[in-house]
Image (cartoon, rainbow, N blue to C red):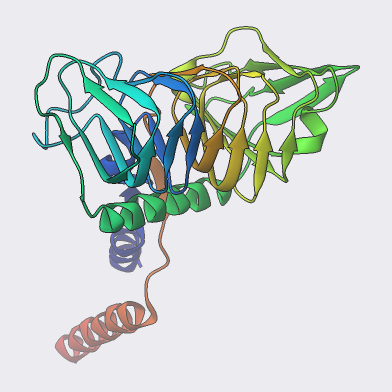
Length: 305
């Protein structure tokens, strides 16, 4: 029995890092569709559709572009580029097409833009990573809760794990004039899974938030309208058109983003946690283990005779 227990344990337990590959998480802003408006992004940006800059947009403000690969661009646009923009810190820009009159300036770099680049494969890969990461987090078991007292909402974790997981409905916490506070206790990271579309009605995120360790996962939303709310933490909204945040203290990964005035996306990057999981052994493996144990028992029986 002891031998069987050890063999079964060895076959069924594993330690998994449930993360996207480094590709998606190297970016401060990833959209599978369009970017419309004006932004200042502290890190690198990938736009899978068209980029229409309505004011001067600036990318890679804080020089967060990864060292490897060396050809990593501060701005990549799979579709068409229009408007005026700067790419900071000597980084480059690549795109599919460019409208007449579009201006792309690369600070500290000469001949820094490349047109006619096919980014469709990267778009597909990043979009797949975004969806996979969102689905992974959606399926985590909740271990933290939300309490509502009047218009005050507390997202509170009281356990001893390092990761707090919330599974919430958008309408339960983002209601008119609500104030949301995050209380993590001993946890160092928070994943806040939110179901439903979002239309913020004068909601504020209050108290102390660890921006780089907080992730909002709007896993089934098609519309996320922040209505000028300041977002604290990173956001995944893989299938959603996102509108009008007052700014992001974190990264944004979404279908599209549209704003009506210049907004900043700060480089508080989400670092995924390592999550322990148990894998049930395949039937063929169990059969093999039991067969081996049966042969071992038969051999011992023959020796006794």
